[in-house]
Image (cartoon, rainbow, N blue to C red; front, side, top):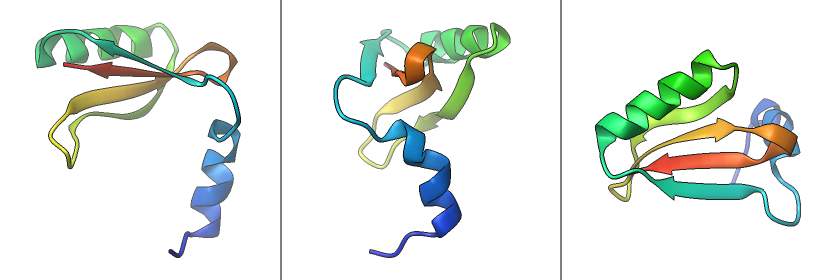
Length: 74
């Protein structure tokens, strides 16, 4: 697999050992969209989404405190 150097550098701080990812099931796309917008408005960085993933999940990912990734799903 080939990776572009700038992508590897950009995401390097997201790759570490231990807990770094929490997922919350919100029940609907509308709730995923609403909470994503609210967190962005509060200053949290959007990593991806909201989007439909290749395996059929609707999600967004936010970078939260201490580098934790928060995944919001239906």
